[in-house]
Image (cartoon, rainbow, N blue to C red; front, side, top):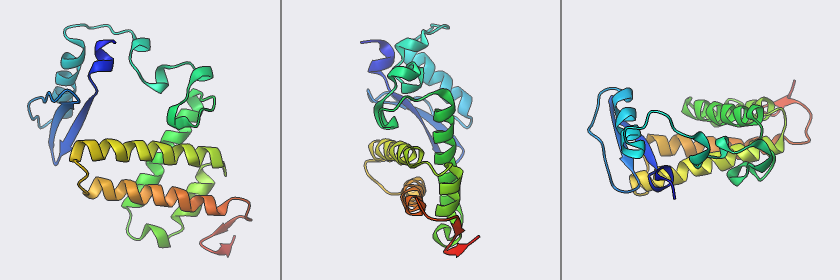
Length: 175
């Protein structure tokens, strides 16, 4: 097992403070900037190594497209598809942060943004479920603004699947 597999480090942000936290219970100093926390995390995982073999780090993005799997529905996932999934997740999170996302056609916007692809939306839901699981591990299941944002984004993505097979419409009105 490589050192990168033993240590799964995340950067926690609270207000302006950043802190690296590892699954092995190690924690960095609290920093007012992101970069020093990232540097602490790097040093914890890789020591003084400057060059790291990316293939040794367990991440589906470092796996060739033909063998990618996990929450990406086992489909062949290329760089463009990964970017599309990540963009859809970010769009869902942005829409979830807006006031009254359910009443402003957000689900339809996500469906349209996905290119009307059920697979893309399903993969984005899987990614948000992973983010929720990480959040639960970090915060002992406590709900906060990030949790609310992720739950809302997941709900919007699931609601967007309701537009599958329907004529183009926005919020119930044909366009």
